[in-house]
Image (cartoon, rainbow, N blue to C red):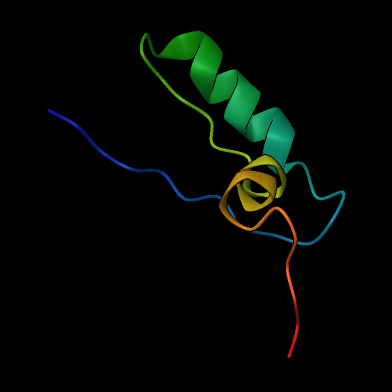
Amino acid sequence: MSCVVWITGLPGSGKSSIAEALKGRHPGFVILRMDEMRKIVTPEPTYN
């Protein structure tokens, strides 16, 4: 069975720490960091 865990919160609130803890406990857990994904999806964003 697959599931998605979406972690949100203010900067510095521990989102990455929680994600890393989950990854350590669950084989196959994948972390998608939106800062990195944004660079791939929109390498040169325009805010028009």
